Image (cartoon, rainbow, N blue to C red):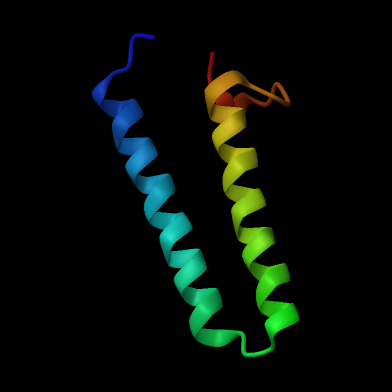
Length: 65
């Protein structure tokens, strides 16, 4: 892999958004079941975006060339 500085910046932003999403779920959702579901949704969104950027799972223009 030939990672550039831009790739590391995007990774830092994605992990920061993941942290903020989990933190927001923990602070706002009080019900244990709703908290688990919201946590899973945040993590799944992160995994799908990461996978799309890494290997182009869906072939969208979001993934780049």
